[in-house]
Image (cartoon, rainbow, N blue to C red):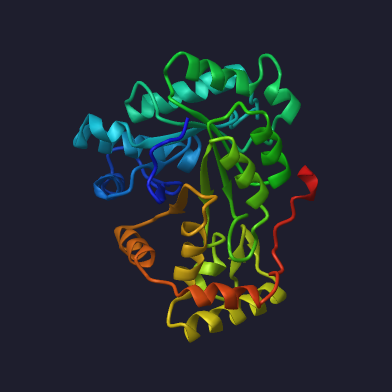
Length: 305
């Protein structure tokens, strides 16, 4: 099935981090969650392990205040056992139960298998494996759709190729720096899956620009990548648009991507995101971008090939 997504999905991985129930910090986080729900974007993206479960807990408190409509706009993910690393059918069902308890909902529109690194692909697909649990949840009607969310393109290609999933989410691998997820997205698109592209800013340098300590894909940006992004930034300036706007629109304009997932930490960031999405980017800029040649990405998926 194809989900009725909007061009942007709002990520909540940091929501509620280090907050304590009943504290002023939690109240501030809940107020921010209410602002996310009040936006025009269709879905909020969370996970069982985001902020140690606090992301879902805060979203649940916001849902109580807003009403049942908000409950239909949360996408979540099942995660391995944080202590043992177990990621089988039983863990998937338990992870889902933990999630819906925190959110205060009975069902979810979409549930992803999240970062399945503690089980092999064959283990996840086998009888009693994690994917069996997801299929059970879909067949029982407790989730409308199931997906897989991770990074390494070789691994993601295998999961997409099973034909089991309704959606796929890949992060940091479809950006102006690294477009290695394109074949995975193309396959998913052909299969009628909903395609989510996460982290269009590369979790760092494409939002901040080249600077000391800049990151790409959770790794330090190399001097070579810093120099390449400097050249890109000069191209952006020449067309009168910002680097973050170009980074975002690289994903928004792609026919392979149904929704771009961007993590947010404040109401100010939400306003900035909407402004970037509304920024016109001249077509000629993309031609100029091609002339820069391939970027020296820091991503190395060879371990999952």
